[in-house]
Length: 301
Image (tube, rainbow, N blue to C red; front, side, top):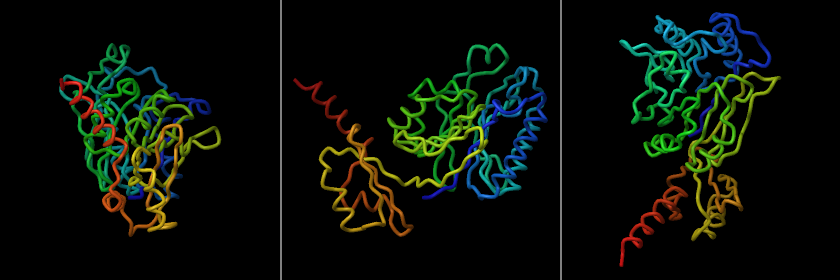
């Protein structure tokens, strides 16, 4: 399934922020520009309304206002809008990544599992450990926020739950940590951060596109049904696929990692059909199978 995704940087290298209104006006203006490419999904950075300001989470009393702000934008542009803001529930306040659908309805949220020590001192509560990915018309989408990047197992949990795309709403860029996570778990990552480091990483760890000082937002169309496979026992498969489908399928090889990818280029070809027809095993399934056999051999006498 192809999906158009845009991601935003708050561009702190190029702009001064003096109030919440500054950030909200910036987001509104950027989304108006983004609407020209008619994206399906737009990602916003961590606590984007309060970014760059000396505002503690505990001092934010009305968190519903920002939900309404995001909802109205999602509805106005008929997009899925995902971004992090504070969310007060009872006596607790969370740093939550909220996802709104095209109608402006809140369809899912993710509470930051690993807030930093200063965040917790400012009133942010850690989220629950077992948070599932969010169902959308594009399949399941996972969510992670900033400091969460340092705990790989929770990214894996969401990938195992079916997420092929994870939105990373953050203050800091994450850098090569994100590349390694994408590579290990074969998941697309959409990074939306404070500085000019927002972008989209494909499911083999490569940056497809990034913001810079000339562009505060970027977009790309990605094929979520891009499979990642190990070359072991499958060396003859790519040529067989090309003989059958020709230029309707894109295949790339990654020698150092001993991997190759298969991407259908037309709507009448589905990855799951190719996998079944050519008896392919995905990279992650191959690793799982090998690990199972290793454990069995380890236990045997």
